[in-house]
Image (tube, rainbow, N blue to C red; front, side):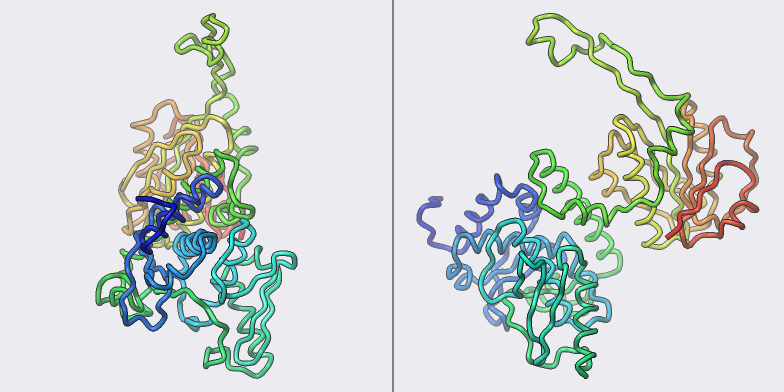
Length: 430
């Protein structure tokens, strides 16, 4: 395929993907996970759009009318909608106003990454970090756009409309946009290429939505790591990833307090050569840095919901990043052990890909018993739970220290101290 003479929309999309590779590895990584598909001819807005799964719908004629630089920015725009799970999070919000808020936030990210967008979208002003547009004759201004989620931007749109006596629902007089948003939360009719965009006639099931969310959160973490390794992570993107994975506990200091006696000291090893051995033509030992071995038990019983699991996930990422060499086992437990994963040296993508099975009763001591049997050398076991459990063991029953981390919606500090008979107890305050 010649990239000097573009004759089809498919070639133009491929050229834009290639153009993203070196300067924008974060966006390129995400775009490569999307699936281009021609938009049906009867589409009410024959331009481009995405659905929750990452299908990129495009109208051939519209794509051919765009400039090369605009196509690069367009792909970055669309992949952000998918990776940030915009199609899954409408809830009961007004669809059109929600789409405007999403575009304002995404357009600012693209603009701040020095990419152009097709004309006619929601405008953003980089110098002012703001977006201004008219809805039903009301001028809407969103300030500090780069610091806001689309939900926050949406709330500001509603507030400004209501101050002018509008109902806070789209009823005409909307700003012009060029991209379609195909919801994946059942708010559309689910037809392939139309509202719903999932390729089937029924809304996505709850399990399908969970699978999509896990897959794209993993992709987002992988893309951030990929770009960071090249020193090309877009401004503000680390903040977004960290906001998704925001810990409440200062793990570096806490772990040092309880595992210091068990740290593998800095030492030398001849098991493999130092990386400078070949240059110096001398076999040098490599440095063995301190290593921490930790077990984490995660409560996946029926009382633990999606928000609680996200909270726990954030803490696991923080633990993995707390020291240079952390070897960690993560075990999911309800009334029985439901899954177990090994995580080495802050592998965030692997953490994001873990499947938190469970939904039954609660017995974290089942998990502690399992660790006692299968991980004899571990000095510390961290249990992440809401504390709604029964406790039949004593501290002397375990050869390791137990650190109970109670999430913010779990039992109170007072109940935690009274009901849990052993171990260190920490309450995650919101």
